Amino acid sequence: MKTLLAGLSALLLTGTAIAQVPNKTPTSAKNPNRASWRQEPSGYRDVPFGATQKEAREKLAFGSCDVPDSDAVPISCIVADLDVNNVSVHNTLTFSEGKLVKAAMYFPSDKYDEIRQLFYDKYGPPMKRETRSVGNKLGAAFENEFLTWSGKRVDVQMMRYASNLDMSMASFTTIKYEQEQARRAKEANEKAKSAF
Image 1 (tube, one colour):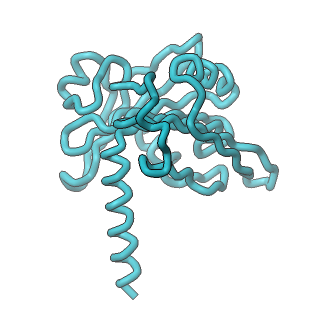
Image 2: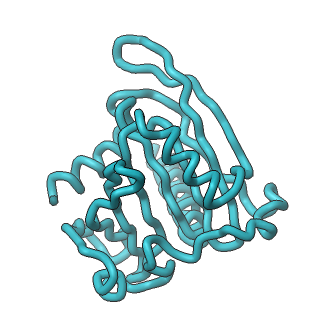
């Protein structure tokens, strides 16, 4: 399990197999539909956002969790796979300051259309759809699709190709956590710029 968590983390961080521009989530000010999304999820797999790791463990079978270098670093945990229409979905939960702030699901990209239809059925049409060209190491080009549903508290994002052409991903992230991650990235960038 620890190897799978490390592999998923590396897959998300390195983008080793394909190259693409990262997706940017619309902010509340830019997206007036955010307040009108009635299907906004309040949690993931019966675990509400804001739940503690202990509370999540009472509802889901956990695999392993990473061990951060400091308390300021979020903790990611692998939880039991989910079967969605006979598609095996790998799941991770992210806890920041002890609370559930993000859930991600990974599944084979050849099942993307099936899972995307389930998202349309459950959450309605996305508020934002983008496509970008991605390429593999051999130079072949493919079209990646990014879908975003934006609510008052949570953004749901889905992409055909995560960090390789074999894996799709969907994530459920609290707006507060997205804002905190953006703030940290900006601080790190400023610190890096001042280093030279």
